[in-house]
Image (tube, rainbow, N blue to C red; front, top):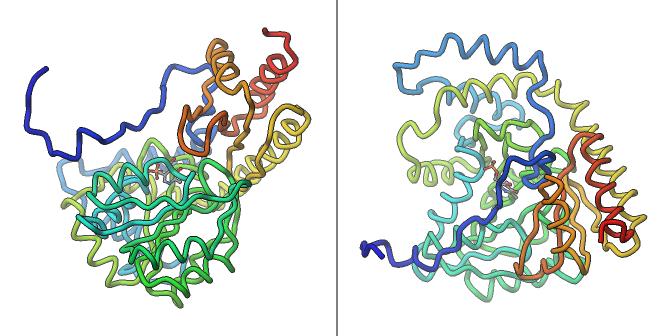
Length: 356
Ligand SMILES: Cc1ncc(COP(=O)(O)O)c(C=O)c1O
């Protein structure tokens, strides 16, 4: 093997292990199952046709920040834009990480927290969720205080379990911890109760949001962060100059301007989730977890075989292998009604034994 002097921490770093294929039905990444609404697409295409490709991004980032700030009754200085919320979250781990700094996160939750903690050379402290995947707020607070953590992160509604943490619990945690407190709200539009209203009272609170899920803009990679101005200023130092490209910025700007166009489709995705939850509950050998997102987590003793069966039919769902607390679990994102009927029928066939 070629010997190169990589950074020491890289060798033990896990990779983001999603199996991608040209799926017939792709319900493995919690994406939106529809492309841009035609009226939004028209505006985006028109705007893209007069981008100054020869110029570095300039006012486009401020335009988007101003729009977002206005919606939350905040100032532009409270907003940071990133390449997906991934970039924001990764930078937050970097900014509050470093040797000996501890970062507390729930387990199971978004698998990247563990990886970002490693790459930031921080000490990741996972706090186990309860048997039903609910969060014990006191246990979380104790872990933060006992470890003198530099940062705590919660994901609500939580990926991959689907459940949300109540605003009362979030507020209780905010009142009792003394470090940066990040709330990852990647799926909040499917739930509705954002912690953004708590920001003005809890200045250590940071909210991460994305355009990738409810707004179906995963391809453009745009996310944003809401926080007190001094936090935005410090964290902003970790980003490269001109880190956001104009194509994504103007696209997100139009999507945000036209976000009312997304209300019916978000409702549709929620309705599909409710419908599929009811259907899955009919399959007695599955444990189905309640969800406030655009996906559903199920536990089934033959999850790996069911996953292989799905794969053989060109259906891609998310399997977690032997990830802690997710043994025998599959996460299925909501597709179109037809796609949902299709994977459900496959699950029904498999569980009914017809496919064995
Ligand atoms: C909980 C959570 N946070 C953040 C992200 C990152 O999303 P993006 O980088 O597309 O904004 C995801 C994506 O799946 C997620 O599930």
